[in-house]
Amino acid sequence: MALPLVQAPAGSTPARRAVLARRVRLLVAATITYNVVEAVVAISAGTIASSTALIGFGLDSVIEVSSAAAVAWQFAGRDPEARERTALRVIAVSFFALAAYVTVESVRALLGGADADHSPVGLVLAALSLAVMPGLSYAQRRAGRELGSRTAVADSKQTLLCTYLSAVLLVGLGLNSLFGWSWADPLAALVIAAVAVKEGRAAWRGDACCAAPAPATPAASAPGGKDDCGCRPAAAAVSDSGPDPGSPTAGA
Image (cartoon, rainbow, N blue to C red; front, top):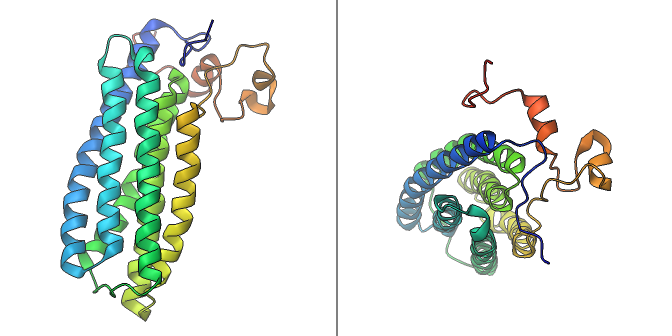
């Protein structure tokens, strides 16, 4: 008999899982809202400046919205576990689509695409995303790991990839503005494309986050109690972080 894609972590109470699921929904809503605004600004600024990097960054935001929407759809149902596989496939396809676009546009830019103009709006947007995205990614990854949700962790990696793209965009636009090095951005973006393919393959296989292991598994006896995905049994996570402020047991 096939095991479910998500297993309830050992020591996790229904109340605690409800708190974590609600937290994931809120983080996903924040991610979608931010990325919609980011996409509009980036694509508009990129079109004005003839910047392939900025337009690509805006399209990445659209892909990030689709990934976050898949997680929102999963956790909107009464049985999120039953929707896990479909949501993972949507996230994986999002990674592959991003990698394909970035690769094509980067190669075109390296082979002699039109040089982009200086874009102050693009520089500010990249810096802002570089400050905002890591926090969103970390919070969702932490909640997803304790909850045992592969999709929440996979989407947090999509958000983290957006952080890397923000850094690449910031460096690329900066070097282009200061020194006219138009090749810097597409070259670095190819590295990001390779990372996107790797994460897409992991999400497609369902390896984005291991379900919480039973105490007898080798993963549970690894240093620090972590498995090879960096996940820990919920009991260990709760003991390290303390009771959740929103949990009914907080302050008891």
